[in-house]
Amino acid sequence: MPRKSTKPPKVDRAAENFTKGDTALWEHPLFGGLLAPAHGVRRLGNLCPHEGWIVVTADGHLHVHPTRLADPEEWTYALAHALLHLGFGHFTAGKGKRPREWTAACCSVVTSFLG
Image (cartoon, rainbow, N blue to C red):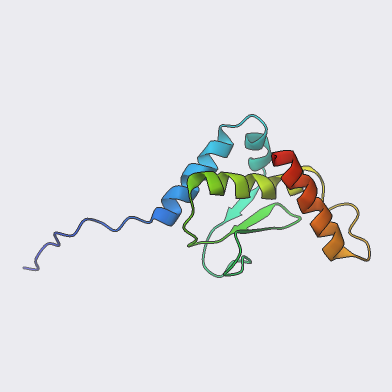
């Protein structure tokens, strides 16, 4: 008969903290409404680069870094930032011929809003 392990189960702090940050947004009157139609993609191989936090797409998919260890408050901020890009319509207007500049301007607006 195999021996039972006496080690405590491994806790995935990255997932735990992400979930706490996500839950805080669901409870917020503005961000809960923005989060409802979004689709979270938190798994290896998604669009989020290794050094990134979240990649948001025009169709409402949030490609979240699957293993980043961060505080729940940091996840709340990162998710809120991504959701505001969708909420402010940053994917439907203004990109034109200078997409990098457009993206930088949009991030500036979102960061200012989150103040």
